[in-house]
Image 1: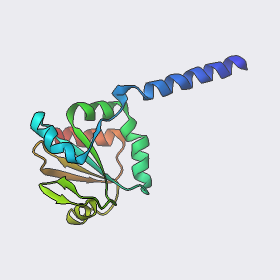
Image 2: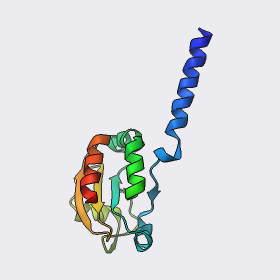
Image 3: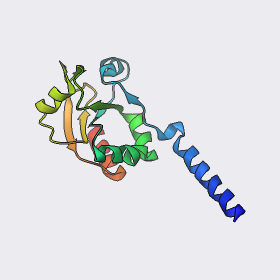
Length: 146
């Protein structure tokens, strides 16, 4: 029994260590940094619109965004930003200064999570509503990067 317990602890420790390696984490940026980032190294942008109370947002955070393939692809090919759609502090996005609530209303966003796909000139290319699995998100990302 002691051997099984030690083995279980070793496996769990290994899995937790692997999940925390830098290659498995998305490098989330602040929305107000995008202009400067694009000036030095242009890339497409993925913005996750979420709310603290959103169950599907939390599930995406714990599954999709922790997938090593998704994290590596996003960190290598995109700037990634999270915007809480319930906040009222102004942000600079799509050539405007507006609150996330105003952005949600302007874009007619109906629920969370919603992904905004922007090109490297910060122009909106696509709105992707709803929870995405890792494979679904990879398809969206690769299609958008073209």
